[in-house]
Length: 176
Image (cartoon, rainbow, N blue to C red; front, side, top):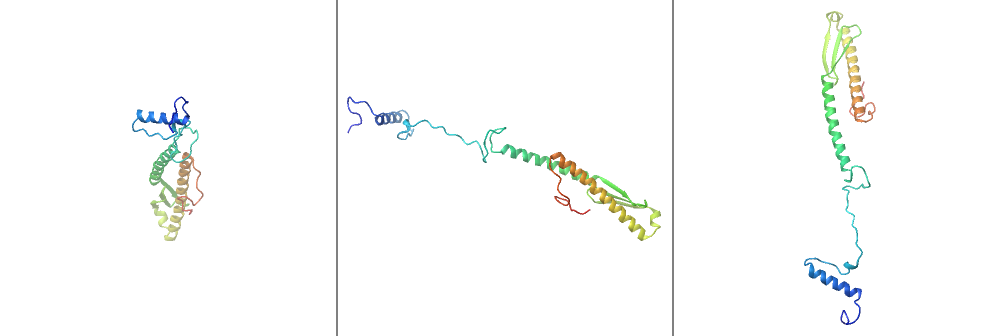
């Protein structure tokens, strides 16, 4: 049976076939599926997120990549600040003197002993007295150095917006 009978109006199927043939002639290399001309236009949403997310967030899409880059940048800044603090602590001298004034001990902010000075008067009191005075001054210097380090670390944590870790946690020895 012919597709189009003489004198009858063309059917949708005939029009579709003619349109398809016309499209094939006008655009070589174009592949059109049967019925494609009769379909309603379809809108395809393009994915905008790399790792999920979405929504109308300020700063555009990217699935949080901008936020990740900001976090990396903050971590790098934090590393620079921590290194500067470590250097400051190494170069800071904390001094303590025994109760009788016969021994002076110097410790760095990083708790490294730097110097011990004993007066001649203290030496004349004997080894036991000198030992007790050195121990007294060392403990005081260490305590002062730890307090100084803790105050500097607290300032750093506050500056970057982090809570201070509990005593003995995150890098601390817990010994006082």
